Amino acid sequence: MTNRRAMGQLEAEILAILWAEGGWMTPRAVLERLDSDPPVVYSTAMTILRRLWKKDTLERRLVGKAYEYRPLKDEGEQTADRMAELLGAARDPDAALVHFLGTLDARHRRHLRTILDKRRR
Image (cartoon, rainbow, N blue to C red; front, side, top):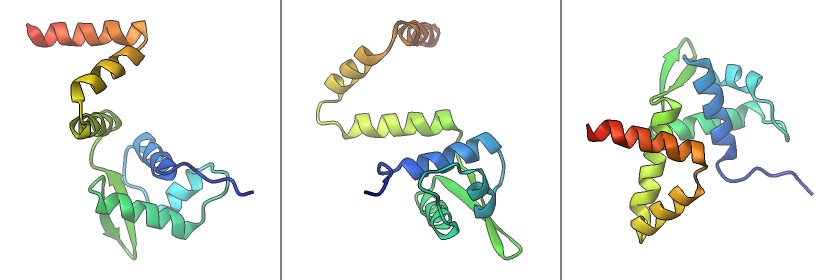
């Protein structure tokens, strides 16, 4: 039986590499940093980068004959956008938010309270 990644896992791994690098990267450079099982081939890395670019998650520029890519948003912004998207798509967003808050540990709840208190001022 073949090891298969969860849907979107390779995109997440590639984004993590790009965020860690903090600058422009070629598909080859991304592939060299990708520690993956099963291994990823160059054409797959290019496909994922192109897909993320088409989703407006990455920007790209042509350097010589190759494209370089970098994220349009940092990890925090991207995560917040995704959370807002999921919450907006929920049939009962209030219930989804209550359930999400119930999953937070005490440290995250305290941090959230601090953020909310600062915004209220």
